Image (cartoon, rainbow, N blue to C red):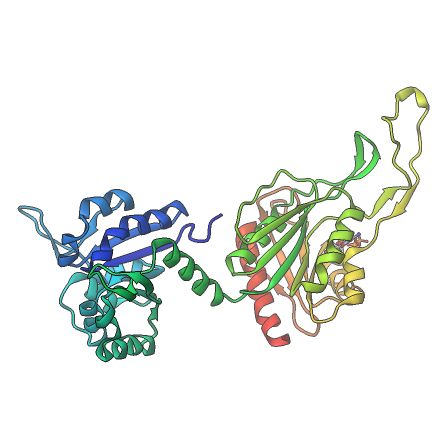
Length: 405
Ligand code: CTP
């Protein structure tokens, strides 16, 4: 999934020559799955047409408080537009628009939306060399920063006036990339590495048969997506499953057996901030795997089993600053047994999966969990989708992780 997937972006276009680049900017966001709405100042229409922006954004473009509709003029609600957005970007931001933003002058729809906004606002200034360096403009940009607006840098090069220097609007892809960096850096798990094990493991009996279980891997994949959306760099170590994930922050490592999961877990653990073992690792494996398919006539009636490595217990024994979370699947004395695992495996928290609810657990889309930490009362959650459970789990982890680090 791309970074801007599902993001709602309000783009304000003011009247500078760089406005001709805004259809490309809109496309760059849309390509990543964002929804973009555009507000133009009246003078920006001299540089780019509303039709171009409406076409690339797939949305009507607004530039005045009243929409022209012969008999029934409609009020373009700037407050609603501003509250709709996850973030607002004003690009290009001219000297005039910047100055009006500083002085709360509400002379057009773009400024009204900015003044009503509650979300993060970015501006991409675009001016001529001397205008950009004028102390009035520099002071205004500083003031916007004080207001909490993020002022993007300007590019350097050939300007519309024929001069060479600072002041031109950044290229659309540079703007997109800077906004992505800025948003990621403010997310709670930004710059943190989160490693998650997921799915079952298959322990080979012969090339076509194995010991395994019916874990779907869904819970682990939802945890990976949630961590990535919170800004983490995620490594998802997954056993055989039909689950798929595409997210620029998720690196997926496919394994088959407990031994392979163990090796990869050990190699990623030292650099992890948070490690979550949600995999349903097989506890036993055949002491050897036949190299050829075992035939019926071979009178095969016994498999000798040996234990697989307990990945989580090993990580608990070498843990330094990592926040280590396990899962527990219990059928009786659930809380007590989960607490024993928490202690025995030296975990920071354990998520107890209840098998007592017929809709929760292994194969399904829902789960019902209790989150347990040492010396704290267990927190039980309602039955909900695994996606919502992943949100609950990370809400808890973030609170305790922040306290512990
Ligand atoms: N786990 C692991 N490696 C194993 C077995 C389990 O890392 N070989 C992890 C699981 O991913 C889970 C936790 O340990 O986070 C508890 O798994 P669970 O199956 O509930 O318990 P076990 O430790 O296997 O003990 P038991 O089956 O006896 O309840």
